[in-house]
Image (cartoon, rainbow, N blue to C red; front, top):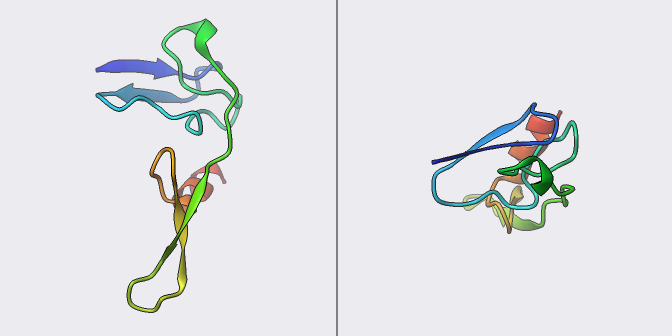
Length: 79
């Protein structure tokens, strides 16, 4: 297991196999998670893939193609 942090130290990530994607990181300093202080890069926006409710067929947010997180959840965490 690896322990990563953002540049300002406010966000942490525990890696146990799948490394963090370039769209995951700290919203405060705008950097990705890194092993060492010189490895931080600027965050890139999530790349959404639309999803639909199976019962109604209505749009139900989406999933990021890189980090596989629900876009609704990511937006609510940033607020």
